[in-house]
Image 1: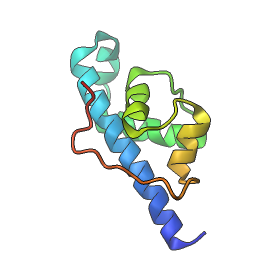
Image 2: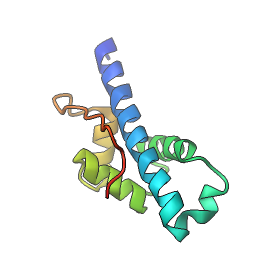
Image 3: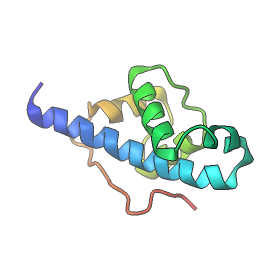
Length: 104
């Protein structure tokens, strides 16, 4: 693997993680279903944990935050599409870094 491929993969991981953290920030405040996890983890810590779990196949994708992050980034809401994005297997796909990670 070339160094540029590694950097591109990290860019996608970082973008997905930042977008997901923004979603968790919103849900921690507005959704009572997230109250328990909000008392234990920061949005950034949970986003990192879930991003890495999705990348290695150990995390469940069915939460609202992951669905919203996928929608925002234009990723199909499937494990295959999420893992392809995180691993940058589609190297022609632009990596969009949102200025505001929350969906309204």
